[in-house]
Image (cartoon, rainbow, N blue to C red; front, side):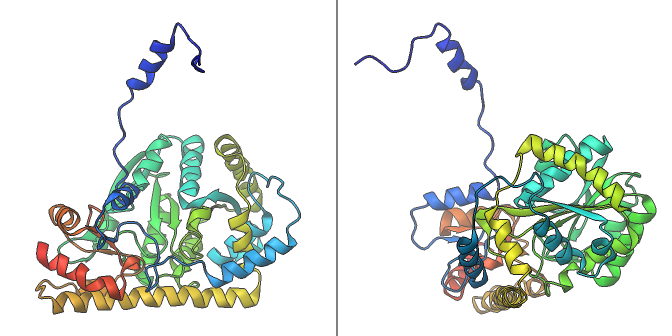
Length: 412
């Protein structure tokens, strides 16, 4: 049988093109998951990626999501394309969740929202908008931060720089150093802020500190960009929006990249949102036309299913209340794991003080473990933690707690 590949005089030359491509480094988080999957050890533990797990070690579909999906399946009439920005109902539901139903931002239509493929997609849209419309400004990012932040904005052609956030000695944020660094930002620069549950430290500004930050950003003419991926996982759905809402009191222009991966458990549906707030409805509309042009050139328009689920739940009072209860249950289990983690470390003989972990919020803990200790946990014990020392508390269970803590004791 003859080959199905046609002979071509330039075939060798074509192959050489790809042979020149060098391998990209593995993603520090998702690459760790790939390593974990290949690890044959049966007692391995994955605390790298930020995915909530229940006591059985499973990532369940929320009951409210199942109810919404059943209702949507029954009423669905078409699989036609959505508009570039997604549905208006989704956009409004997102804005109400972020700013409050009676916020003047909502009632005066000062915000425009586009559905995005996850929080990462929303951040990339933000990066493209900043680069194309604001030019060569810097994006100020906390040190430390989520491993992908710099990559997303660098890929959009933006320069990133860091502001101080965490004091490794005190195991707390260094607010004075944070303010000192942001004082160096130039007018028009962008400040990336974590809406709540700072990733990876789990340490958020206080109410008073949010006020100080909001005033500083306004006074210096900086543009605040909120990465809001964990609403509901610190204190509560409404309470966790306090920082953003404080900024809205002092800043007439805000960008928000939000995600429903965690608080709706819709990880593989990639449900996010990019929200732009302006000083007037007309300005918001004009600026948003550029956002739509960006989206059209990247992914054209968004998928429907995940956003429809979120919209259905948020617009149904009974399901909304049930969903908030489900978020509270996840939040409380994570906090329970924090306390158990600290206590179990003491029980296995770890002398170092890890009590700071109980004061952190959200899915992660910044453990303070060194890269060498993290490497030993993986190679010797099959315990997978991000190289920075970030541990996914959301992946801890009562059944894996003792081997985890014994492992940490062994490498300290």
